[in-house]
Length: 300
Image 1 (spheres, rainbow, N blue to C red):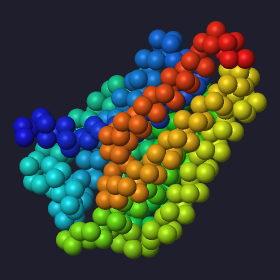
Image 2: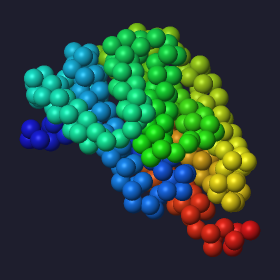
Image 3: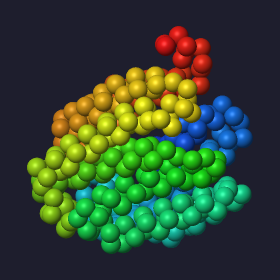
Image 4: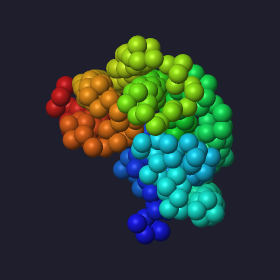
């Protein structure tokens, strides 16, 4: 593999899809088709993609020895020694500088959220990931910071229900990742996962997933019919999009149980066609209901 491709692999662009949470405030603030808002939101998205790559590079440098024993992570450039630590540090510095340059004119609130995101993830890499439950909630906080950063970038207010829904979604994904890691350790004789996973068990994880998925469905449904939501959008029809959320939860639970040793939730989401179609259907439905008045009047 060529060096540019190794650098790209090091930056983990497949993980950038998580930063799509930054665009939620843009969509639900009814500014999606206004160019200044769209450009600003995309700049904020680019900053977080680069900053998340910075965190991934730092994590790969710190964990390269342990990753060499992992059945999947051992293929990462640093663990496989196909890329040097010096080159990784150079990539880290370039990505950080590019992110700062792209977001230079964004608000201080956005930079507070972005800085908190980086600091929290570095703390996670160097210690917090070893604390039971704390590791899950650090990941969840990272997703909520993404949503807040997206709102701060375009100077809009985010519904508390949307924040709550983001919390449950991120806890759900984080817990499912822990489940897969536990199962992966059980089927790999050479791989010894980090100590905190010994504090979890499948029964506890499944209970946590049930609670998180229930909270996700309920909080989203309540958001769609909340007084503030109805007043802003002028319709209660957003409740109909709940069916896509519930289907997505059930489909993901099915995938997690079927693909027991895949410890990458993003990979599951991006490679399952029914899930991709469902996400697109949810997104299109939200946009149509929120932005097209003719459709609103037709559905009433």
